[in-house]
Structure formats: structure tokens, C-alpha cells
Length: 259
Ligand code: CAA
Image (cartoon, rainbow, N blue to C red; front, side, top):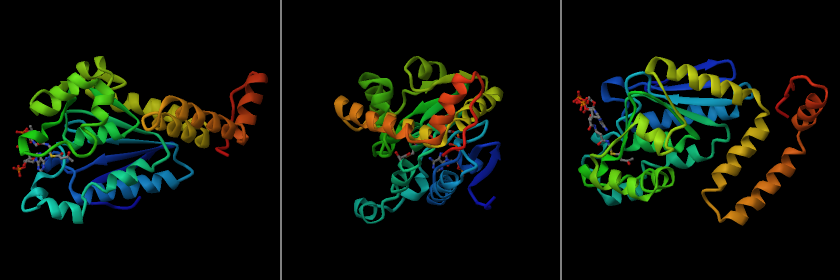
């Protein structure tokens, strides 16, 4: 694997794992980290031996947000000229499913990164919050958009406007922000199990599902249904559809070729 300064990379079967690795800064998302993370995501996305990705911060902290030290001395025009959040556009282009495994703080950009992923598995220690207002700024990587869609308006307003109301794992589960909650020492294993199931399915068809679900956040219902209709027609064009249907009729497990 490529050696990075701020992330660790490993593979378990067809699952690629990216671990944010700036423990002294609570995995704050500095420019180098977001660049390295996106670089590796693009590599996994292009790799035929990878079917799903996990992003985690390890067992202590997910990420305490953007790197606040990089904000010092920067003004509006600096951000307009060099937008430090441009990496989020590249993140959106990843076709393979991404699971966030969150233990400890997922604050600010950390919460937003988790929400950019396709699903979130939480350890019991997980804490989600948007404390940007305390710095005199706003959640700028999706906090005012994705959080509303995940937990509803009132809770999102409370979290973003106060900066101090955080959501712990169980509450995040209750509000639908996360898929499931596990003991810290078991959450990675649980996510890996799910990622392995996803990665064993037809990769092109998995990408169609991810794209179709994400499209539902962008467009009105009928446009989403039309997109979905095209997507199922595309799925019928895959070799994996022929194999999947044949295997069902022959009462055996399908052997997908990801074609
Ligand atoms: N950026 C840079 N460094 C950070 C950081 C961040 N977001 N969060 C923590 N650190 C650093 C601290 O400066 C400290 O470093 P030093 O030892 O060199 O001083 C180290 O990590 C450990 O942090 P603490 O001593 O503060 O740890 P704690 O356990 O007492 O507190 C915490 C933990 C409550 C998460 C606290 O660190 C904190 O409030 N962090 C900032 C959270 C925040 O405001 N996030 C939003 C950032 S803005 C953003 O994300 C914009 C956006 O939408 C993209």
C-alpha cells in the first residue's frame, strides 16, 4: 500500500479500510489528511478487488472537525480563492459504498464526514455534534443540509444553533443518523461483516443502488423513480443479473463476476 502521513490503509478481503491517523490532533481534518483520504478513496474505487470501503478514526475518536489551526489568518477571500472543502466534491464521486465507523467524537467536519458516507455504524462512545457556531462560523461541509435530512429540522437546528447539544450513540440511533450501535470493541467487526456482504454482491449493481439512493436526495420523487427505472434496466444488462437469476433457479449461491 502507499504510505501516507495522516491515514492508515489496509484491506480485509474485498473491503478497503481507511483509518484517520492524527491521534494528537484528535484526527482533525487538515488539508493533508483530506487530500490523502480522497487519494486512497479514488484508488479503492478504481480497484476491481475492492467492493466496499470503511472509514474510521480508530477506537478513541472519529474526528474533532476541520483543523481549526488552519483557519487562523484566513479570511473570506482566502476561502473563495482556495476552497479547502473542494475535496467533498471528489468524495461524492466515489461509486463504491462507504461505511463510517464512529467511536468517540465526530464533531464539526467529523460529523459531516460521517454523514457523507453511505451509512454509519456507531460505537457506544460515539458523540455527534456541530460546534462550529462557537468559532463564529457555520457547519460548512453538509451540517446544515445532511443533518436535517438525517434527524429532522428541530434537532438539526438545536445541534447547529447551540453548538453544545451533541447526540450520543443511542440518541443518534433513535433519530436514524446511524444504522446500529455496538460496544466499541465490536463495532469494527460488525461493520466489516456488513461491508463484506456488500462487497460480495455484484459491484456494478451495488453502484447503481448507491447512485439511485443518493439521487433521491437531489431530485423530486418522479425524477428519482425515473432514474431508478433506468438503473434497473441497466442492471438487466449485467452478466451478474444472468448469474443471480440462474443461481436462484438452480437453488445455489450466485458467483458474481462483477461484470
Ligand atoms: N482542529 C485542530 N486541533 C484540534 C481540533 C481541531 N478541530 N480538535 C482538537 N484538536 C487538538 C487540540 O488543539 C489539542 O492539541 P494540543 O494538545 O496541541 O493543544 C488536541 O487536539 C487534544 O484536544 P483537547 O486537549 O481539546 O482534548 P479534550 O479531550 O479536552 O477535548 C474536544 C476534546 C471537545 C473535541 C475539543 O478538542 C474540541 O472542542 N475540539 C474542537 C471541536 C470543534 O470545534 N470542531 C469543529 C471544527 S470547525 C469545522 O469542522 C468546520 C467545518 O464544518 C468543515
